[in-house]
Amino acid sequence: MINRMVTGISTAILGALIACVPNFIWPIGEHCREMMMGCVSAAKTEYGIGVLIVFLAILLGFAESREIRTGISIGLGFIGILAALVATVLVGFCDGSCAQCACNPMAAPVMAALGIAVALISFINAIYLSRMKRK
Image (cartoon, rainbow, N blue to C red):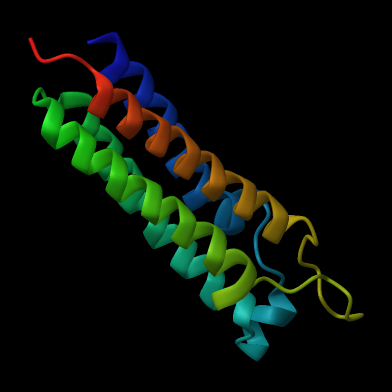
């Protein structure tokens, strides 16, 4: 029970941060929105990924079967990797180097770190659940 709650709540918080950081906390600059640069697409994609992580974390907190929790944890791990890849490789955020850009240059590293944190927590939970004795 304690494993479900701790893992579910911590993953849900990280998912909410993934959804909120590029959209509300460090929003994309107006110049980038007008030019429809890649950082706008990255922010929208990260919002969707963050909402998905929150939804699966809630399911993880309420699922009772160890096998189901293991599967959800593995899925969350791969979604966390996807969040990190979207921020850095697949779409990416602008680094704020152009004169008109007001984007935060720390957006990509922070989003990658949040995605990796979700992946680590989830994969560690999956390993823990797979080694746990059956009741």
